[in-house]
Length: 217
Image (cartoon, rainbow, N blue to C red; front, side):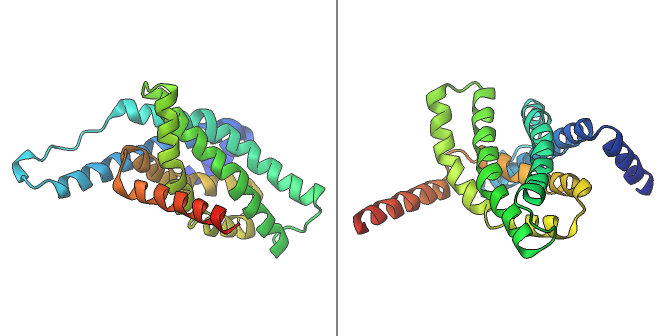
């Protein structure tokens, strides 16, 4: 394990972008396998007829599709995003690293800009990659975006507070990528749930909240 860590450090120092691209693709593919396993397990538990239970088989085409998202978007865009975010807040806003304002500004900027963009591109990409047309993709994005944003919004700020406060800048991308293993599994699971009832509840609750706000103003 120590040799593997040293090898990764060397790759990160010599080829930072390539290393992030490869590691992101691998972790997102692994996360999709986890999502498939969770979905299969859920279906199996809800099946009333024990004899109809099917053996879990990995959908490698879907794994490749999800992994490509890690390769093409999360790796390169995430690399430059976190590098730029750190320089912008330190040099342009002139905030001292590890201070409350520094960490809070980073977490807020990441949550309001990169987080929603990541979700929007992921669900759009997965829809088009599966052969859906533009109208179908729009429907899926409307269905999946808000639940993912709300649930992820309760977890990622905590993850990023620890990241921006305690992890050295050169390892912050690795830290994020490791949590992306869980994130990719979660997003893949969300996408595989289709038009689940709990998603409709989220959308309906948000719609009623907007309507109530309009009436109140």
